[in-house]
Length: 191
Image (cartoon, rainbow, N blue to C red):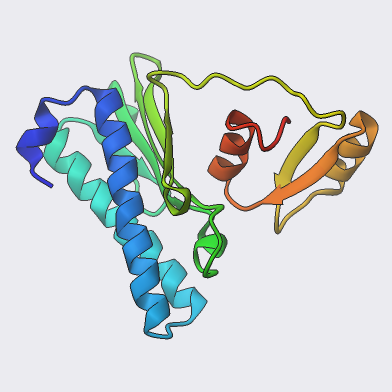
């Protein structure tokens, strides 16, 4: 990636591009490590760090005055005193990423500026999809007789079962928060 290219991008364009490119890094890395017979924990850990370093290096080069808050990184104290903070989850759904063939994992890249979320993107790399704040997604109408409630795949709380039953909804279990939210955006889930 050429940092000069990113200088001309607005924040929306940059969040989208970085989410997509980090996803490409992850897809290639997962395939390479799996083909070499690496265990899932190593695929997960390596993916987390590779995506984190990719995003941190890109944002540092392209937006050097901005702070970065990454789930995988050390605290950047500038985030308390600056108006622009990039918030990234380099690999949301790490467990699912480590399981070959699963697609319910994501890359999140967002910018907090001017006291609000001002740009953001969620990439679902294994599905070759990206969703962004500009243009904002439009939710499809609910056409099912029974709505579908998306909940955690591995930490499904009892309250989710009670809510699904109370609403007459079918429960759908997915990995990452990004995959869950985007399941609603694309109409695979309703709640």
